[in-house]
Length: 206
Image (cartoon, rainbow, N blue to C red; front, side, top):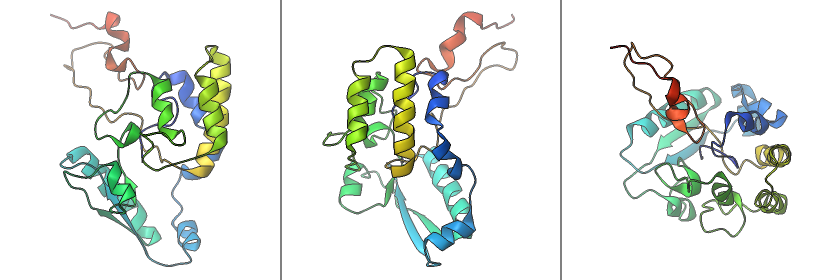
């Protein structure tokens, strides 16, 4: 489970592109359908992240509560050593991480370079996901500067990735914005600029 797909926070305009129609079936939990998909057999899902991390512990706890009605037991099997190798060594079923399986933000600072985490035979592709269509889209994005063409490519990729589900984007960026109550215009943003996107409009009365 990672916090993004191909456009790791380039801008809000691209967020809607990734929310393809294929994502709609995941917007609401359906315990009955989940039980049927598992043939009414109880399932156990081991989720790991590099511990300690109270924020990610809370995320796994929320997952456990949501999955319990479907007969799915979510176990937090995190440790200080948990990482991409944990998937390869079958120590976890799902890795709660950022781009490339890293515990922190994981971004290279370039949304395009981050997209390579879903390219086949790439070192930072911890799930070893491989899809020739996605490889082609990432290659096309590398040489495309037109925003309309980028949106089209990201939309095409979104449909594929929601069907394949190599990653499950649970959130864009788990950040906390702290500001005085009297401060004006300090607004959260999941773009690459973070909370400082409108810093020129901040007002702190004296």
